[in-house]
Length: 257
Image 1 (cartoon, rainbow, N blue to C red):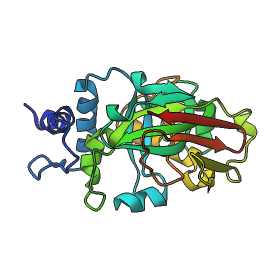
Image 2: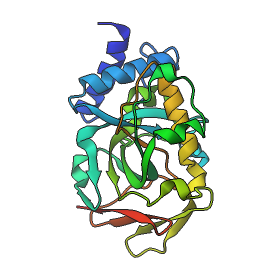
Image 3: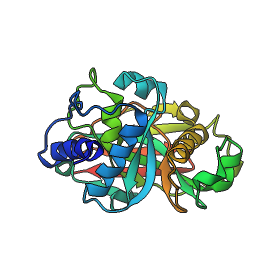
Image 4: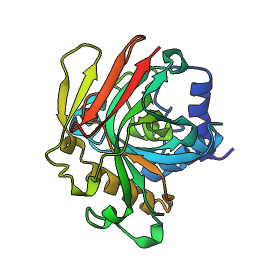
């Protein structure tokens, strides 16, 4: 078995055995970012979870990077079968260490191919079909946040276990994303406010796209890319009802059972 496959198999065996997250051993630690993403591809292919329907950025905001002790974003894949529509009911027992993140999802309007070259905030806009509020369902498998190796987290598909999508934001191209405020409603608690710019969707989209371009990977039309949480990850409990509202334009809702 080749080294890349061994790395992916180590992660898959952890999942299949329902083991808590732990960093790869030194003998399997990827030598660099590229090797970690190669292992991630094999993890995705061999996971039995089906085809990819999009990609995620993890640790896009400073609050999320500080939470994990990492100073840069990472990316992972979203499986088609794990893309849900709001309102959605989530069974907590189906997940190993479920956390919710509060994001903007971008639907891509056309293939983004590596040969088209590096993108920036302006050139990326022609590839945006729509923006929507979204929850990401992450599985941290009871990780020790004081000891997370980013190369291991990449190989582990950046912990993505699906997303829940709200309705599209109307006239997204006329919105000033730098001034839009979002609000998190958790049961009857006072709402928690955050600015969308704290995990700027355009910057995150550019980052993910350019990363995949550098890895020689195409982003297919209608892919969904989630762009990072503006509020610290939170673990839900049975009975929780959670809504994430973006600028009073749209929201996404889940119930935990």
